[in-house]
Length: 112
Image (cartoon, rainbow, N blue to C red; front, side, top):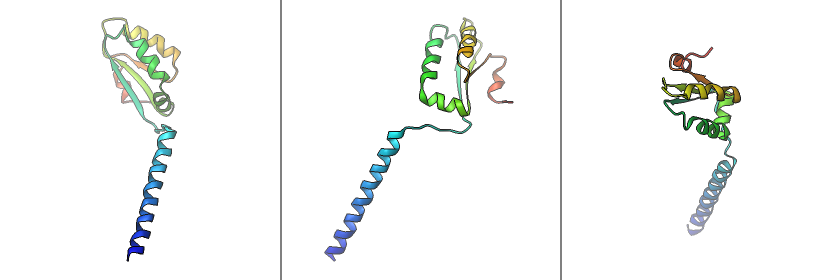
């Protein structure tokens, strides 16, 4: 009976080690792939920060991988400063990004 317990324990330890090795391998790859996902960023009066925020987002591997298969939409929530103007300029630099004004905010829900 002790030999059966020892064999069972060895198989259990082997299974646990295999599980941890596979989890470690999966974490090491860190590939993000999401089919048809959308990232929506709502902004309001962010003239001072918007360019840095968008550039950092577009440099992010996570955002780029999602935006390739879906979209990265930035909706200006009726800013009173120059946020929308800066977003339109950035939209020309980043083809994966789509900018909607407050009046066009339905673009998040209705894609053609």
